[in-house]
Amino acid sequence: MATFKVTYFAMPGRGEVLRLTLEVGGAKWEDNRVAMEDWGKMKAGLANDPVFKFPWLPHLEVVEGGSTVVVSQSIPALRFVARKLGLDGSSDAEKVLVDSILIIYDDFLKLYVPITFSSKPDEDAEKFLKGLETQGAYLERLLSHSKSGFLVGSKLTAADIAIFVALREASNNLTQKSKLKVDLSKFPKLKAHHEKIAAVPKIKAYYSK
Image (tube, rainbow, N blue to C red; front, side, top):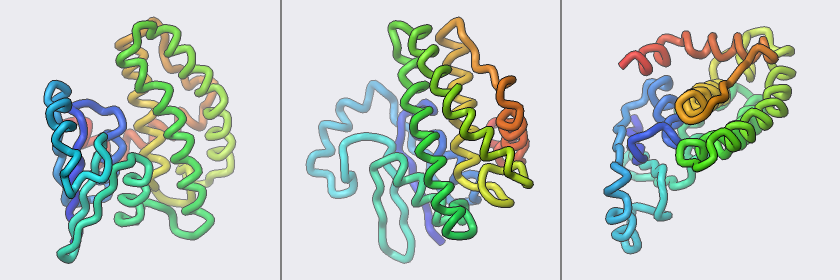
């Protein structure tokens, strides 16, 4: 059985979707959280580190059968975890759709994470909301053809988890840092999807800790 170790800052950011996917997939995993003030010293020591492929986070280590796979890019790491845990779709058509939705997730992430550190949070929040108008319409269209309520196929995939995390964390960032809010009323199917994923027992338990 594979064991996983996620190294990331003590914040959601790019690490949260990996953490939640591992939790939902029932993986044996370690959540290694790095304090921001410790990162500079840690990064300086990575130049000759044989484990870290690239000097940035998140960093994923997977040990299985005596061998170790290391991934230091967030989306490839998420795809790898999804494949290992069977959360990447049930057919070739589903797998490529999951991958496509993860690109939408990454687009969201690039818009909402900067709000945390922004000197102009309202302006950056506006950029996210404009992105949501476009991408939300795509997701609404996908869900209009879904009989299961999931984004892909008939069961939960990493695509559902990623979009849930993006909307959850974006909502938190906007609420905490700006005067604006995420409003999904224009996207009723996406809103229902968000509520459906939030109610998944392992996800509910994860956020109840």
